[in-house]
Length: 557
Image 1 (cartoon, one colour):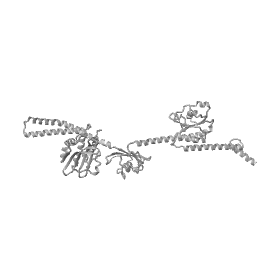
Image 2 (spheres, rainbow, N blue to C red; image 1 turned 45 degrees about the horizontal axis):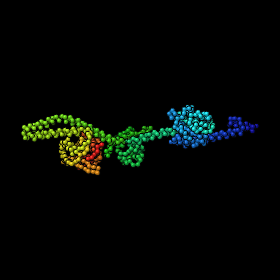
Image 3 (cartoon, rainbow, N blue to C red; image 1 turned 135 degrees about the vertical axis):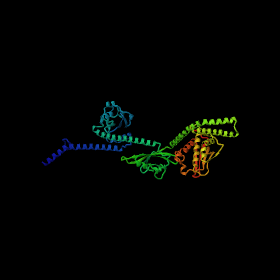
Image 4 (cartoon, one colour; image 1 turned 90 degrees about the vertical axis):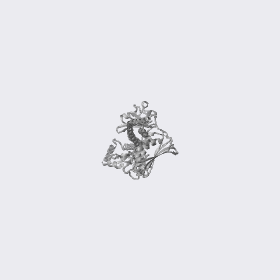
């Protein structure tokens, strides 16, 4: 009875395990079959895992399809593997192996691939000869495919494309293999979407980097320890020690050529105010920079780093100086025109009446000399007024051949009284054989007046005999002949630390109400426009010497 009971229990157990009424042989056969299926599925899952493992996000779609095609036959029969992706409202054949000339073309709307997109379902097909003839999918005809496994690629409920596996065998894919192809399609969809996102991020990164490098102004990212994190390598013209890569170099050394932090570093101001900071910096070399610091915040509103933007505004500042000087000259011109009109009429009357009295001859001999002085002074006044009008008309006349000695004499007629009133003697040493130069006479007037008035001001505190010497001569050099006009004084001289700064716009050592710092800057600009320059030699306590150098054969641009 006991043995019978055990037999009944085993029989009952077999029925529970198999779900059918079978013998022991049928039971073991069913278990073996299921084990083989499980092993097959495990092998397929391992193949999918290996395929996905071999795919990198920086691979092209063609490389991805090729990598899948190499391993796919280990799990399922495959004569063709194709990938079609959605682009706007079209389904485009993107990559396939073996290759077909339909790559890059839209898939016909009546194709089985479009059915997978519309229904969002995976299906297998075994096509008859008649069905193959009516299909609008080029690979089916060209590859002579009979069996198909078609799976939509779905990402976040959206179909982004279709995976197509084809075989020349009949009934190559059973319905129970849909699960495998579906798993493969899901994994490929994730890989393709990741590759797309990676490409978008890479393109955005490339665009920003190219934009960053395309900017002509130096832009740097600097951390809180003054280390350069990144820059656009537009650092030419800066005074720093630009050797090697800028990354991890200190900004004050690499950009500004200092061994320690800048005295008025904007980083401190940014950290203190939690806001952008700005400063204009003028170097001894004459270059002027606008420097901006912009804070970069972490999510907790703590400053992580700063963007350091440097803009070279040297030419802009020079233009501003020239515009200010032009405005001043325009005011002088307007005033001079009014004075000239007011003085010309009475001066003409004085000169005319004096000449009429002289012509009548009914005057005493002593009075003749007095009348001649009146006439001469009147004519001199008219010349001074004319020179003042000429000087004030800065209308960019075309350059013409000009004698610098005559320019000196014209300028002296305007400013000699002011200089002599300061008890300053003017000594002329002009070479009478100077060749003419191509120049704008009115602009050279402006240069020489600036140099003469500066020399007068330098003599103000000189207790000795005050002297200004004006010398003109020819200078021969390898590049040709030059005419030089040198204005030297025996005044207080220029400190060594200011020699490199005196031509900078708006730099002045005079009191606020006595100088704008524009004279020498504008004068140097005029000299350079004539192909020349202004040289300076000075020593504190021994006077200064400014030399205007103009080439004889300057070619007008």
